[in-house]
Amino acid sequence: MDFDIVPWLQAGDGNYIENSNPTHLANLFLKYRNVKFILFHGGYPFGSELASLAKNFRNVYIDLCWLYIISPSYSERYLNEWLETVPANKIMGFGGDYHNIENVYGHLLFAKEIIGNVLIEKVKSGYFSEKEAIKIATMILHDNAVNLFQLKH
Image (cartoon, rainbow, N blue to C red; front, side, top):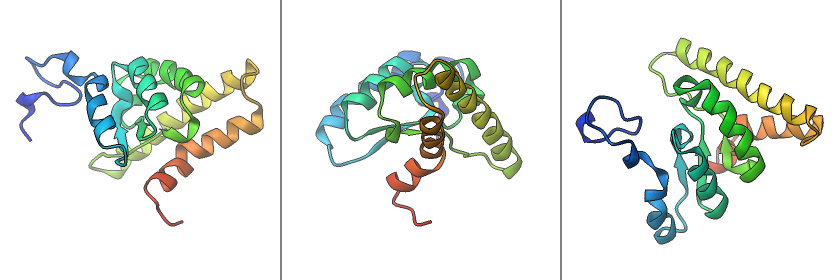
């Protein structure tokens, strides 16, 4: 892969951040309505745009892979927003695509802490009941990926 061509996270010099705006993909979502599009890294740094896409296109899903490492505060802020605007079954809270298991495990711990913080605040504010928060945690950390990828468990 040639990283001079505009990598997703805009690594290196000479890249235009605007090229990573997920709204540029809307024509594909419309043209290929039967294809499921999973947008990685929480659309960083375009979280609100990603929320609109996932809410308005039945075939668009949010994946927070790498997002907790990219920016913990972004992760927390946008997960909070997405739980208010996007159906919870369209959010996957973790993906571990590291080269070694130790980094996957560390990132998972980080993800669980941030997801827990967001859900605790939602319960404290009365937005979710404790039972709803537990169900959502199970969905975004397990059930959604199982259902989306049609995995057997």
